[in-house]
Image 1: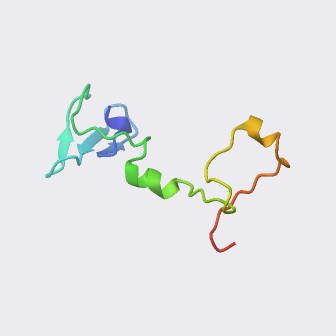
Image 2: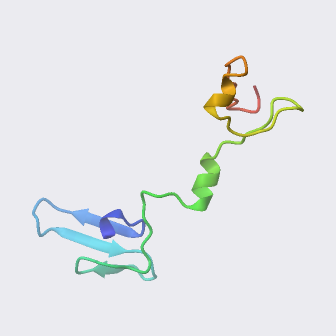
Length: 92
């Protein structure tokens, strides 16, 4: 479980028995001497927290006063000219 935890620091040597796992979830940092099955301080490093998701989120703004901001269903595009505008930077 420590392999995918944000709080873990794992150092491996060349041999199978050369491995040190340190847990930084609590102070002071402590050594984990056994394989962990469950942990109450586990934070998956493969998933973003709310702050990280807000940083990568797109801001959708309407192009004109009659248009709504948001995603458009593919069937709705058939009625229009078929062009999609993607605004990546507010300076453009």
